[in-house]
Image (cartoon, rainbow over all chains, first blue to last red; front, side, top):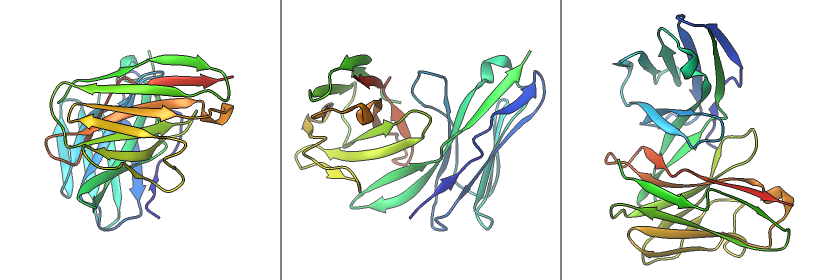
Length: 114
Length: 114
C-alpha cells in the first residue's frame, strides 16, 4: 500500500524564521511530488511541485526532493502569520488505467507566531 | 488552472437521507476526481469519473453508497446515499492540471449528518 507520512505537528515558529516541513513516501516509483496549503475550513491549494532531485525555489518557498531517501521537504523562509495552515504532501502514484492519482499525507499544521 | 465550482458549500442532513453534490468546471476535462476528508484526516480518493463511462471506485468505496454521474466534460455529481453520522466529512471535487499529475480542487462541501 502506498503511503505518505508527515509529522502532524503543530510546528510552531516565530515570525521571520524558517519553517521546515518534511514528508516521506513508500512508493519508490513515484515521479511527481506536491505541497498543498490548506487553511482551516478551506480546500487545498497547490503551492509547489517538484519532479527531480534537488531544490526548487519559488519566492519564499523551496521544495527539496531526494528520491534515493524517498524524502521531500518544504522550506518556508521569512515565515508570516498568514502562513499558518496545514501543509499536505502529495505524491503522484503513477498511471493506473490511463490516469494518475495522488496519495496525500495527513498534513503538518504550521503555526507562525507574531 | 481550471476554475472549479462546487455546491452546496455546506449542509446539515438527517441520517438516512441522501445529498447530491455538484461540481462544475469552466473548461473541458477528461477526468474528475472525488475526495473525502474526514475530520483531522487527509484526503482520501473516493472515485474517478470519466465522461461516458462508469466511475472507478477506490477500495472501501462502492457505487451504491456514492453514486457518481458524469454527463459531460465539464460537470459531475457525487451523491452520498443513506447517510449516517460517519459520513460527516468534507467532500472535494478535483481535476488534473495541465501536467496531468497535479490536482486542483473545488471549494469543498462540508457535510454534517445528524
